[in-house]
Length: 165
Image 1 (cartoon, rainbow, N blue to C red):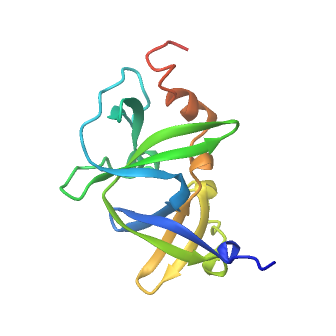
Image 2: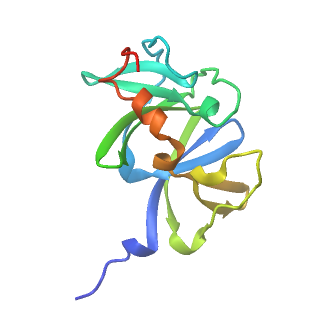
Image 3: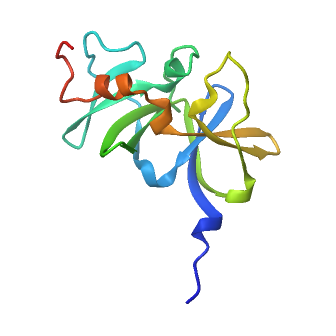
């Protein structure tokens, strides 16, 4: 029995926030939508833009730029929302992630992915699953489960939205 090669290569969706290029595993991406204003949720964290109706489901949508400490997203015709199904603990968190631009689905070989560099205190680097070097810079692979803390997942649970803690 021969093994297929998926262990050697994985598919990622690449997107940008400003000049930086990020990637998430293709298997967590449910769909990519044009940007639209989200329905605001009172008392949510600043990066939580609100809920977005995705095929009849209220999906919390976040501004990843704010979550990473960058400036707020200014929507352009290229702005997209990646609808993601992120496995966190024993459940799946469905989340909209605003990106300045979505580029492509691209394969990265496992041996291309370098460990996240320890870059000191300025950036929280624990959310970086790895870095891929390209001729025009780097692609940062985001570990979405690590990026979202326990408080985030409670704040982003649409069943708890609007309820005081």
